[in-house]
Image 1: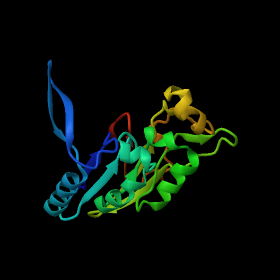
Image 2: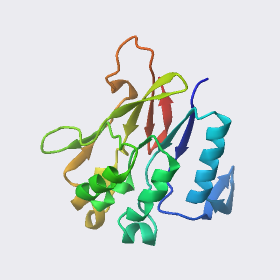
Image 3: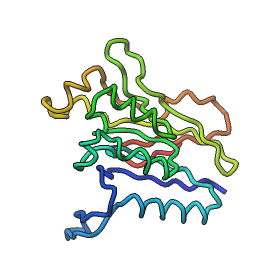
Image 4: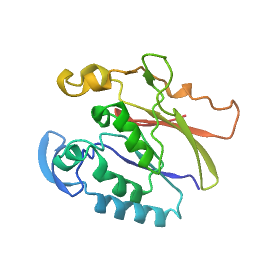
Length: 199
């Protein structure tokens, strides 16, 4: 059995369901979306259906966007995120609280923050782990995280860029992960800007 991939993205600090704009072809409609209790129920259901053969990823824009997210600088989301049982996380506007705060938040999560393209300008070294290897349902899967490549280029100067200035993001192909040639390992990359890519 191959693992099932579950992904969340752009939850933007909404702990509870909220009205959201969706496009159905050319027609716009508002409907209820999100909510961590709802996500948890879906994750539990899929894990039961798949006998635990699930890899769960968070594509970012998670800890920012609502009053309680910004007021607590992401802290109010640590427990709900840990209850989801995620396997990895990458980032976008989550960087808005600055490098030190992102590290504090990441250290409290049970899953790693992966960013294969986020470098410290002063040293040129990677700021976070670029990948992790997950073993699930007899499969070994190398997961590469790619942070949004525009975080140091488009965030408003007066809000985020000044605090995130020690970083820069670069383009990063999924094949850059240092996995052994010929190994029985499936690799996939996940990013805030796109769905996962499997190689």
